[in-house]
Image (cartoon, rainbow, N blue to C red):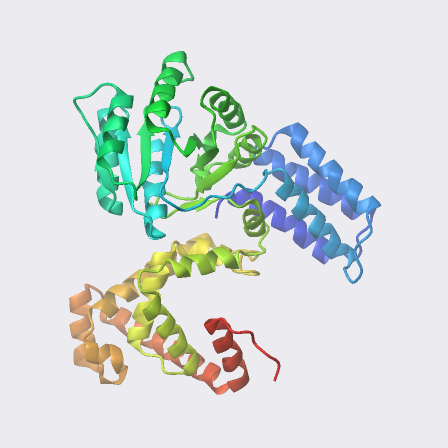
Length: 446
């Protein structure tokens, strides 16, 4: 999970509130100290951390809970609102063909982010053209070309041209108007007049709808100063914060950029091309505090390449007609939706639980092997597992490069899932409620 250490510390604070016999001055003082420590360890500015905890203390002692709310719930709500407040306002992002300029210093992840952003657009039905305008680093052009091939985007480069603005004008003239155009530019080790002058020429040639600064979260609080400087120089419309998942300074980068005047629009949550998220502070804090993020989970489901098959598998599971083919569809859907641990963090309650990372990784490996085994089965075996006897088990193991014990473990797992599904199917009231939810209808009391 993004900012895992900060999230664990803050969830510990909420658990302390829930376990306390009463919310008194002593517990409040302890909670305030714990929040300060958690924020400072995540590299949040000292003054900002002190101001936040002072507001928590002040609101908890001066405000009265609304009717029907307990003091515990009200204190948790105050903490949620104050942490949400330091992450800035939500910046809406409209998905349509537009021109996007990516700027930033050297080594911040601009080229990779260009590929991720292209993937983000294409998964949502908007075609993309990637432009290699880094004329100082040939490797960046090669990398962007490879990324374009991976995501299925158009690509333009002119390796003989040394003027970035000329390359951009050529690309704009070549690409059809229905493409979203993303321009990857050169970086420097620092913000200097040459970098700014080149960016300004490229911006004039492109006339971008969006000018995004790409920043590495490992910069911590200094990310805010970079955002301010670029904002003054080229007029940013937003910031993309990268490598947020692996940085202990991510809290500092998030909070510093949020007050820089340039809103955070996207965050990079991992190395894979799919791991770029539109930054919505409300959802982000919900996941951070273990309250889940069902909306993002549903959006990932909507992006599945074969949503109809996934829906059919889910309906079969609810009705008790569950086959190995349905299991294969579900495992394929899980693989598309992202790492298992990140999916779990979006589920309310599960996100707050202490999840063993090693166990989670082992589960993901096991599920991948299950998919390999299922891919080695015939159509008849997928539709009727009862035909899989000893000779078929050996054949499936050889075909999938696994052991017969693993094939039998899969069949055992399937049988347990099928029985659980059958139990669900026998509960008619619960099944009807789930089916109404699944179809988008309102569940009515019976």
